[in-house]
View 1 (spheres, rainbow, N blue to C red):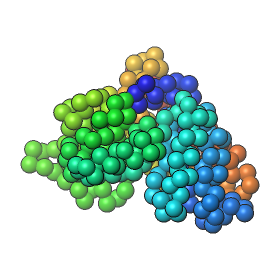
View 2: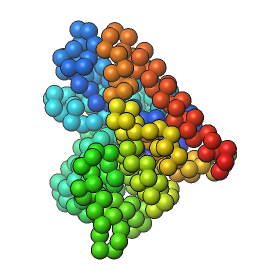
View 3: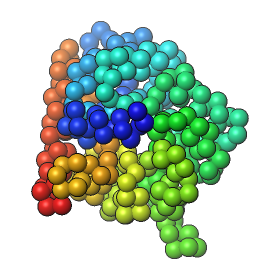
View 4: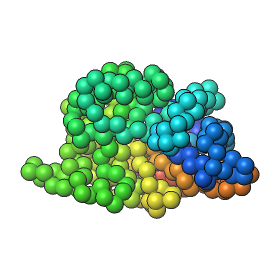
Length: 283
C-alpha cells in the first residue's frame, strides 16, 4: 500500500485529519520522567497508545531524538507505531536536502533504518536532491513549500521572473514534472490559509502536510476549508494532514499526561471534522 493509500485508510478508519507531531522535550516530561532523555520512548509510546485511533498520521521530528542521542529510541518508536497502530502511517520530519550519494544515504536512513512511510524534504537544491527518495516505491516525499514560520517569506514568497512566487513554482513542479511516481506531497503552514488555497489550486490532488494548528495559532476552520476537498459524499479527493504537536503532547505536565493528550487530540479531531462537514454538504 502506498503512502497516499495509507492516508486514505487512516482517514476513513479513524475519521480524522489530525496528525500528532512527536517532538519529545524531556524538560517538559511529567513527574519523575522530567529531564530524563532515557524516557523519550516511554513518553512518545504513551502518546501513541492514547491517540492511535484518533489520527491520520504520526510525525516524529528527528532533531528531538538526535539531540539526546536517542536515535535508537526513535527506531523503537516507529516499530511500536507500526505494531500497535498499523493503520497509521509515520512521517519522519527530517527536512533533509542534499544531492547524489549523500541523498542516497539519507534516503536509506529514513526508509530502511527508521522504516518511515514518508519524509519531509527541502527542495531548494533541485530535483536531484529529491530523486533518490523516489526510488523507494510507495514511500511519501513531502516537500517544503510555504512553511508556517514568519521568516518563510524571505524566500518562499519572493516573485520569480515568471510571475510565480517561489512557493507557487514548487507546487507546480511537485504536481507536474517532479511527481514521476505519484509520491510527492507539500508542506503548507496553517498560518497562511490563503496560500494553502493557492497551493491546492496548483496541486489539486497532492497530500498537504499542514503544521501550525494549536500552539502556533493556525485556524482549524480556515485550514480545512482552504486545503481539504471532497466529492460531496464525504470521500476525500485532496487529502490534508493537519499537524498539532505541543498542544497534544503537553496538554498536561502531570501523571495524567496521556489522558490529557487523548482529550486534546479528540477535541482537535472534532474541530477539524466540523470544519470539513459543511464543505461535504455543499460540495
